[in-house]
Length: 375
Image (cartoon, rainbow, N blue to C red):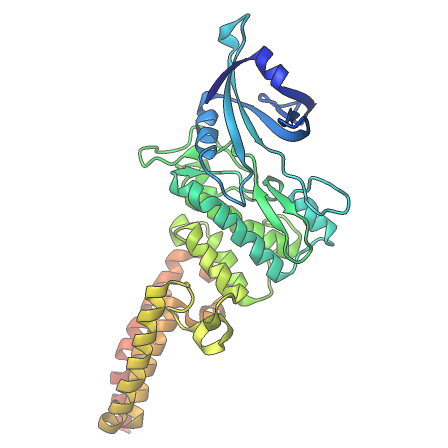
């Protein structure tokens, strides 16, 4: 953090426009002179000491999907030192290659594309958001206000746009000792429900990403219209935006892997049978290796078991003890979508139903053999 006076700030930056004239802390579009005499645009964000600590952490981080924070200034008023304040100097994100040379938010970009985006573009953008937040979350922070207006288009490409996350003014450090947030931050619809009554964690940002994915595919804000297309993508949206944070993705990295799976970035994703099997959906090497060994072993055991128990016996074992548990526990093939959405979203009821199915499967062979024996 660099200490400067207001006079030094005015000499170093040319204030061009106040972007938030009606807010407590102003955000300015300003110009700074390069050593060669050329000018480049920056954003000056006024803030308190707590927010300054967040931007100080951001100044030590570089990520292609986060607007750069160049430095944080402690500005002293020489006439009245009590009026000192903090300013973060951040990147001014504009849409490179945009035909109109505009600074576009994600919501503006969606409108320019006719109101919705295709599945590939939507998944790609959400993957970029996840990657942008990954290191920020690892540093112990949560953004708390991920929404389309805080996602800027940095490269205008109708099929593969690049994005950058802005406005970390509502971010906070996650602490296990905080019972609840003293200030509620977020935008209605994109704000995680638990942020109103309990301490906000990284899963609040995951909730917002799920809402953004639904928004890009429908063109409607959360709660107005739900995406009803590809059922695998529906599953991602439902899991990310689950009302209970416990049932969401554990990290943005886990969500990014699920998004990558649907984009079919790896060979197993393009093989219908493999992409449905647990272990090949997370793009985690040890899980893929373990899954491969397990499934090959199952086939080998099945061949041996046929000679011992007969075809009917091995089918019973596979159906009741392997196939059903894989479907119920890991949602293999996304077959759990046969249950109505109201049941899937009721986590307690759905857990009870799945437990009952597992128990029924465990006694299934016994019941089957009994019925056949009676007959």
